[in-house]
Length: 357
Ligand SMILES: Cc1cc2nc3c(=O)[nH]c(=O)nc-3n(C[C@H](O)[C@H](O)[C@H](O)COP(=O)(O)O)c2cc1C
Image (tube, rainbow, N blue to C red; front, side):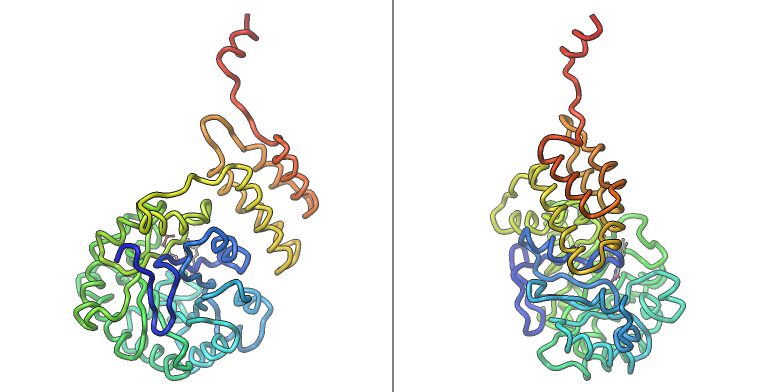
């Protein structure tokens, strides 16, 4: 499976690497930023409320926004009402979704209390009923996928809940299954369980003869991690969430490592500054300036983490962006950075000694 592009239903992807849905992070601007480096086979929206989409609430429409460059794109729906989910899926198909994904992994109270997200793993009949209704509503050309965890808790893992559910979802038309290697109870803590992802891969392979891909997800923070995920689980594709937040080029690197055996050097700090500018500019274009400012202030420390080296600290850039009052100031700070400002160069020992003498 190393270096083989994925096919999901009738949709052929350019690679086997995917950007995970991450509520609050994976808006159109971020998906395009990741895509700009290459290697992204598929990107997914944050989880979407079918109710919000159908009522046309601005928040839902903003989250579902896509464009011609943002393809192929998965739109992810959450909920527990088969009819509403089917109507939401049809809305997604009519508004640019390449495929529709059902969220069966979200552990957040707001979602789980309404029997959506990972609560669906506790009621396989309900989960399968939703998938069946969604599949029936969608045009044949739009694949249905689902994203789940390895089970609600350890007992569910012992009962191979994810494998059982995955096979039943495939029986009603799911074209790919993504598995995050944690239980709901683990939330995002503890180690991602490659052995349990492998169990789902093996069960699905046995059930389908290898026609339906399983995508592994969890704790992939480097190109080497992506290769290890494929090697240890046998999964056909890898989905990356948090590992892309500071390094949107991780998909390119992961694909390069698989197909060329090596990766490019990390972008220079100047190139990263231009990436930040591009991301910020798109947020201003697609959303309001206040949104873009709020987001860039909360994201800048991630980017700066990738910029800091033993030779240079970009902490001042972090501070300057976080305190920039408007879009113009953000651009000015980036210009100043590109001109050599907003960074700390450690003094050489020689300079320090000369000063103290
Ligand atoms: C802030 C945040 C928001 C998330 N939102 C979603 C979501 O909307 N839908 C979903 O299926 N998973 C969501 N996830 C889970 C991720 O898609 C992914 O399964 C998880 O983070 C593990 O992968 P990673 O280690 O590569 O981040 C979210 C995770 C985080 C950290």
